[in-house]
Length: 244
Length: 254
Image (cartoon, rainbow over all chains, first blue to last red; front, side):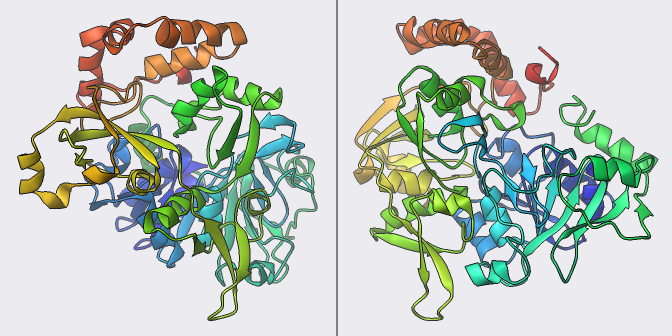
């Protein structure tokens, strides 16, 4: 998943990252095809040289040897002005339009599971040009209807984001799971499969998705990580905290 | 307050309601069993949701002395519906815009790298929300690693993050941020965080943690002894300078 995520990031662009898989993917991208990728952390670190996996988005690793150590106000303003090309998101639940839930499972007032809440997720989902969701693929997570819409994807379909006042042209770009890489249909804004990881069948994906996922007739297979990519990953997370 | 400070306070029964941008979790370490239980069992009410930028800009509005500030976040979401925000049409261009109201905390406590006895404070590294929070709070308590002279502040006035007139009290507490990370000085104490996460899986364990490190401790000196004393503090300083190997006990299946 880290490798697939890294490959979505173009050189010379800016990416808003959280800790965990997103920063690992961003560092891998920098050390392979995107040396000029600008990494930005919501807590204020702009362009850090991250030496080791940060535990928190606000810890000192996220501004280590950075070009600028500022505040959340400025970083979020940078995103709001349209400077941030990519944003990474995690999710407990996702629907066919890429709307995601990180707030509650069950009823809001007496939840079955209380989750952390939006954090910077709603901000990234509202302001970044292209959001990339990294999450586990199963029927409990890929649902017909979210228990709570924490962060907007395409809301209820084409044009809805703009109607609500979200910046024109922004929205979910990729959803990367242990089964494959998904994108969104240009016309309908519904989630569709772009490639399946080696060994994963169409049946696997269908049986793990609780909504009608668009599956094109000709599907690519996700390219396997190269030895070099794996080597770099091992250096970035030597304690295997995130990568297993 | 940060999630790291909120979760034990909620578990100790100090919180009845909370406005949440991010809580009930400890980022890479996982979710916080104790504070989640408080909400799932109905003892703590979540009064409102908001996003990080939304909350940050509530303090910014207060810091600017204005009643609200327009933003482009939260539009179209349930986060918005459960927040203090109101959406209106921008009177200049007509597009929807999300207004967040000014937030004036009754009390804020901020830990800084150094300050003089009047409270003129310097913060090294990223400020996160501290600048706006300091300016928005009705009462502000500064805890500091180091007390310096007023002359030193005056020689480099651009380094002042928080001016004295916002500050109500100054407390000198080196390592006061523990188990948190103080940029350039000491890193997170992950052994301590792992102990909190392990104990807080049950109500009894939570009480045990609070007795060990909060209620059963006379002063900060004793707290430092209990968390491992000078040896532990040196290790945290080495970790911060990347001179020690980082271990995450909570990731090792403990």
